[in-house]
Amino acid sequence: MDKLIITGGTQLSGELRISGAKNAALPILAATLLCEEPVTVGNIPHLHDITTTMQLLGQMGVQLTIDEKMNIEVHSSTITKFEAPYELVKTMRASILVLGPLLARFGEANVSLPGGCAIGSRPVDIHIDALIKMGADIQVEAGYIHAKVDRLKGCKLILDKVTVTGTENLLMAATLAEGTTIIENAAKEPEVSDLAHFLNAMGAKITGIDTAILTIEGVEKLDNKNIHYNILPDRIETGTYLIAAAITRGSIKLKDVRPGTLDAVLDKLKEAGAEITIGENWIKLDMHGKKPKAVNIRTAPYPAFPTDMQAQFTALNIVAEGVGTITETVFENRFMHVQEMQRMGANIQLESNTAICTGSEKITAAPVMATDLRASASLVIAGLAAEGDTLVDRIYHIDRGYDHIEEKLSQLGATIRRIPR
Image (cartoon, rainbow, N blue to C red; front, top):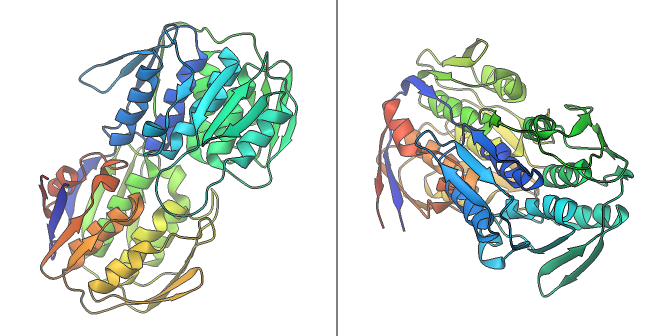
């Protein structure tokens, strides 16, 4: 199993290009199942989850061609199977996103209940209940969702809670439904909007994008030709590298980004003492060699502070001036990185769903173990600020969501290397 070794103490500096967003690429690749014509998706990040998604589509009989620039051409007219097996779904929760497209276009789907990171309960009841309301016959047996329908029927769906994958699955299903579907309390994340724009490019009729009420007028088929759609930049990768620079008191410029998707994160970095300047597609952070200040954070659905950034800010707080609190409201088991940071000398007290961090003058390198995707990144960030060599184990998590993280950090001056298994 690969490991990373990080030697702390170097201020990060330089420029870096941000990759396409994993959390947009996965639903968009699933959405290609809806289109009868070939579709090309560009700005795809080089990630393990992308490989898993391609394996899943290929196993169904879909033809995929990838070029040296990570453009993926998808032909779903050759599909022969409508199943997402446990062997693939157990490693990646996003596999559930094939349920809506398969059911909408082909009238059947057999999808394993999902796995993914062990960060808490993420039930699919909302997906299932809404699809039943749209006319699907769904049975859950032996760990699989078995769904059938002649044609889904549009209706009004009021989601019990804000759910990104739930919104995406229902959005895709509704594109080919008979009549109009209204999704209320829809997730507003930029990745959901990117999916909606992609669906419209294929011929869907979706309005209300970027709002909590999505209206989808169902169409007979999606068959727009010669589509080449580029995934939006990854806001979580962007935020992760900004924090890496802040914790090392450095100065970096990130290119090919969308600053408007990071308002909550940038505000907290400014509170921490960073000078932030932005352009149309770039962000620059400069700490001017100063130690960051501790910040208080409370996670919530977009546009509030993202749960996918709280572990990284925990790393910042453990070496910052003062006391900062991190309150997690989205997932109930997302502080598994805390115990590993405590091994490095971090002063963190857990009280229910809040981590109280008192900044230390120094933290010390130690062997640590990654427990989920964002926890992995936070431990790497902590290693950048620690004295000595930090060994991060089980980094297959990080390879699910970060495109060549050791190469990108090396570009910024970090001393980091991968030890192959």
